[in-house]
Length: 383
Image 1 (cartoon, rainbow, N blue to C red):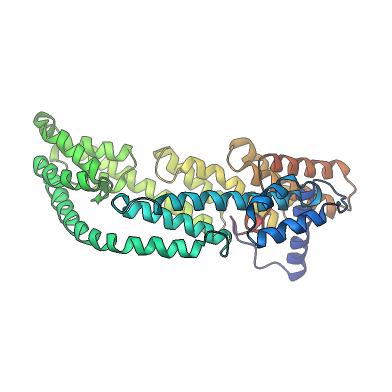
Image 2: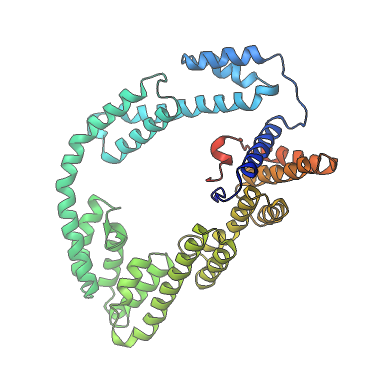
């Protein structure tokens, strides 16, 4: 999300911090007044058990806790569930026989074990040891794969060169062996399996080849958002189709220009400009790479959160409410900041407008119903 404004006075930044902390507390408690429950001891014992890796009984305890520690207990419970699931998935790979292991599955196992390690590095079932074991099993397979990758690169290069020269049979002869061995291997920006299939179809349709098959292949690549491949094919069409090819090349160039401008505007926190550029890209290709339509709508959320951290609570309310109406994505985050903005106005107004305070709590309740958890990561201005 937007960066925290760095040019605000220290007192103002402190005030924003206090207001956000108050908002998090109100979100967690869903009340403007709250007293400690009698479950403190149960919660503390559950945390101690968690720290000692007693996950089975601890999970049951966390799931029964209500009151002041309910949200924190839920977070602990979710950590335990995520830990167990990721560990089980990783171990399922290590339990395979040697002939069933491959680089992709071991990469997946390492990813899962690292996920476990990030949740609790000293947790049960030795996550660090599992990472090392998976890496040890992966090393000899990587050595074997480097030799295989060399010929795949060579064959792909020859396939792409043949395709550019409209020698489709030759392109199929080089791309299809790669596709059989590694379907997802990239050949000139396209997966080998797609290139193989396309070259076979073109090779078997000589009449189509003479009437501009390169243009048709380029249009297909454009429609599937493979702009790199579309560019290459469009530049290789015969003279009779160069006019239409130039139109597609211009569309791609304009689309990429507007998307780049939008990203630059967003980095400068110029949300209106970013929104306009995303909308221009969407007019060229609404379903293009980077989802310009969705990004244009997302600017309301970005701008709303930025306005909150700048203390412009009226603007924050307007932008966040607009995003909530336009998109069903990130509803928890949206309603949390709507609640935080309304609560800030309520507190700064001396708690005079009780209806505003109730609106803030209503937004927090909606955020909780959506499963939102007000962690530091979620509400960070750099989210």
